[in-house]
Amino acid sequence: MISIGVIGSGTWGTALAILLSNNGHQVAVWSAIHEEIEELARTRCHKNLPDAVIPDSVEFSSDLRKVMAEKDILVLAVPSVYIRSTAAKMREFLRYGQIVVNVAKGIEEKTLMTMSQIIEEEIPNAEVAVLSGPSHAEEVSRGLPTTCVAGAKRRKTAEYIQSVFMSPVFRVYTSPDMLGIEVGAALKNVIALAAGIADGLGYGDNSKAALITRGIAEITRLGVAMGGKAQTFAGLSGIGDLIVTCASMHSRNRRAGILIGKGYTMEEAMKEVNMVVEGVYSARAGLLLAGKYDCDMPIVEQVNAVLFDGKDPREAVSDLMLRDKRIENSGLPWEG
Image 1 (cartoon, rainbow, N blue to C red):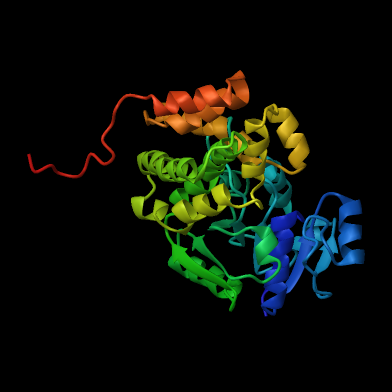
Image 2: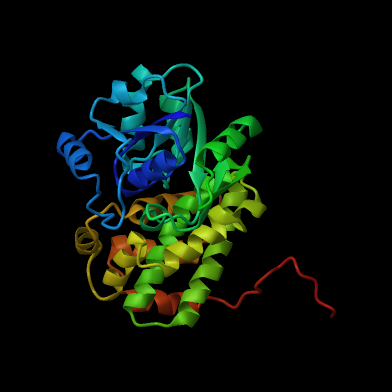
């Protein structure tokens, strides 16, 4: 039995706590919000996961030291905007070499750092890994079949995480490409906003397929330029996560996009969804990274224009459709 501390009691942290407890591990969950911890401990239910039951063995506490003490693995599951501040709080209580598995998806706008890079900066004594893939909390918490990828610098660490999380309903692959995993995980949220906007405008399956396909092309271009591996973006944390986030109503990014397509402002859409919409925070970072690495990312560019410049979504779609004529894959040879 492995002892695990889950830092963050949102839907994803709670879903993973349920999974890990059902795998036979000892699990404790932390949140800075004492009232939230008390409610979870009393009801054994998360308000945003109404169909899930939290096992009695899962402990809840607002004492960070207690939740981190003597744990084999720490799972950092707060929203991306709180990763730096939470990691800074964890520094005092973390022992040298302790494994921290980041499951948040995003890129910090100010520094353009991935989540694992932020954690490594704030907690240099930690061994940082990532877990990502097409994995809505609503389905994982109910035990529906799901597949993810564990990324780490050392194979031994990735395989250890794989063994801890893997179950008959949760399959885990391993990868050394932490950077690629995190770039795909962050930027798919931006493309999902675009997919939702298209849905809100009343466009069809053709539009959705185009956004997914050209979206992964944009993400791959940037990710490879940053040092990620092309194979990663053809995998679970690339095209896999992009498909599920663009297609599912569990996706808060898609839901926010639908509202924007229907005429809501970005602020109104975020308020209506009433959860952190990660793509809004990653959109500007994605555009800044595109400029830094001289990458063509027209979908990300138009999403930014709609979110922050007040551009009409229909005009944004028109501008995408009327771009200069291009070849789909410049690496393919012609016969003549």
